Amino acid sequence: MARDTRRMMVLTAVQVLRERGADGLTVEEVLARSGAPKGSVYHHFPGGRAELIDEALTYAGNTIAALLNRATTDGPESVLQEFIDIWRYVLTDSGYTAGCPVVSVAISGTETAELALKAQEFFAQWTAALNTAFLAEGMPEGTAQQLATLSIAAIEGAVILCRAQRSIGPLEDSLAQLRTLINCHRFAQKIMA
Image (tube, rainbow, N blue to C red; front, side, top):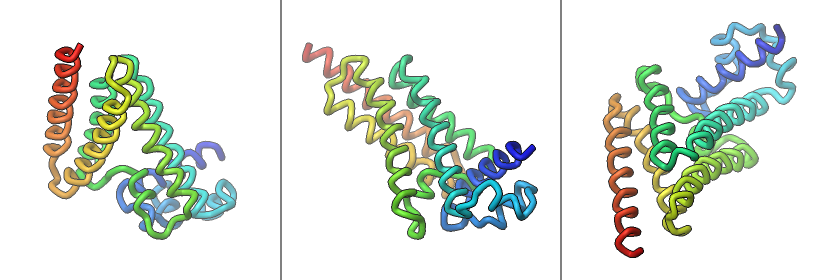
């Protein structure tokens, strides 16, 4: 039962990070939404709010990294599609009120340097998954890294636009143009080979 309470609090913290950002996450909000008793916070998270955010960030970042890493064997389009599918679900399921919990920690002005570094590391892991997929199909190292970085940046930016516009359109537009760019690079590789 205690393990379920802890897990529910972490999942609730992820939800609050998605909706309100790291600066908007309060212990009271997590308790209210999760239904956990007040003493649960310091029982499960002796470090308080900072530890709760750390656990939520770790859970969210690792979950996304695992999904992207599994898709790498099927190529870069599969990784991109997995990433898009995650955000499509989060956005539409929340009525466009939720975004990326890792972004919320990365841009927070009040969280610790350790949490900001952890957010940076998750972006690096996600980019590495795409980079691996690009390299596996023979793309030059520099191009693979640049396309991977561009892809993560475009999709994360699209998530923000989707929330602002209350539409999935920016996400779909980003995916379409990323696919076009990837295919242009493939075509150029064939010509140069």
